[in-house]
Image (tube, rainbow, N blue to C red; front, side, top):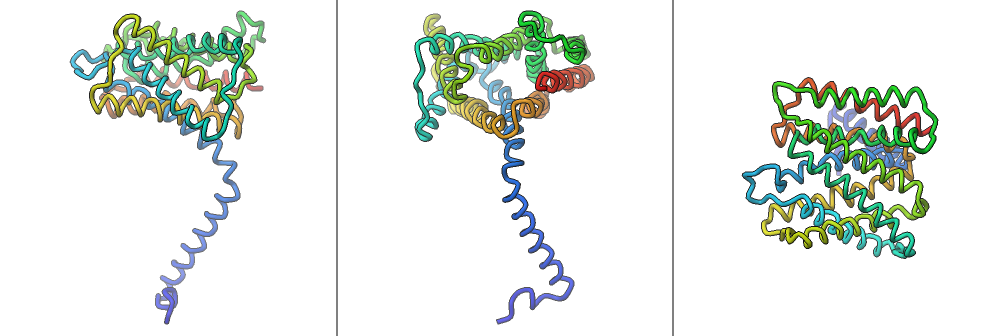
Length: 328
C-alpha cells in the first residue's frame, strides 16, 4: 500500500514534510522550555482573571437600580470569599497541605482579613460612581501607595525613581478624575477607590511584617478568605441583610467570582512567584486594569475617553517603576 506522502505531488510532498518537521520542532521546544514559559503564563493568567472581577460583579451589582437580581456588596463578597475558601480548602485536602495555625497566627490572619475585606468592599463600592475600568486602574495604584507608606513610616530609602513614580500616579489619578464630556466619574468614587488601594497596600505591608510572613502561601490565603467571608457574612446577618442566591444568573456569576477571580488567580499567582519571582509577576499584573478597561468597553459600553487613556499611560508605568526599583 502506498503511503500518503508518496501519493502526493512533489510540491505537496515538500509541504507535508515541512509541516511534519515544524510540528516536531515546536513540540520539542515547548517540552524543553516548559519551565520557562509556565511562570509568565501563570502571572498573565492571574492578572487577566483579576481583571474579570467587574465582568462577573456588575450583572448582580446594586449600582444598577433597575436590576432585579442586584445584591448588596457584603452579600456578593461573602459568597465570593467563603465559596473560594471552601474550594481552596478542598484543593489543599487533595494536596495534603496542612491547615494548622497557632492562636497568635489566627489573630493576625483575622486582622489581615479585615484589611483584605476593606480593599474588596471599597473596590466594589466605587463601581457606583465610575466606570469599572477607571475604578480598577485607580485601585491598581496600591504598589505606589505601599512605597509611599514604606518611605514615610518605615524609613525606607527615598529613591528618586519612587518619587517620580508617585508624581506620575497622582497625575494619572487626577487625569482619570478630570471632568469629561462623558461625565462618568465622581470625586467620591475616586476617594473610595484610593481607600481601596490604601487597604490593600496596608494588607501587603502587614503580611510581610507579621508573624505569618513565613507561612505557606496557600494556607495564608485560605484563612484570609475564610475569615474575610465570615466577617462579611456575620455583618450581613447582624444587619439582617444577607441575601439568598435565588436565580441562576446570581449563582453563575458568584461561582465565577469565587473560582476564576479568586481560587484560580491565587493558585496561578503562587505558581508564578515561585517560578519567575514576585517582581516579574507584579509587573505582568499591569494587565489587570487593561483587562478591566477592555471588558468594560466591550460588555458594558463604558466609553474609553482621552482622560482614561492618559490616566492609564501615567499610572501603569508608575506602578512598574515602583515594582522594579523596590525589587532590587
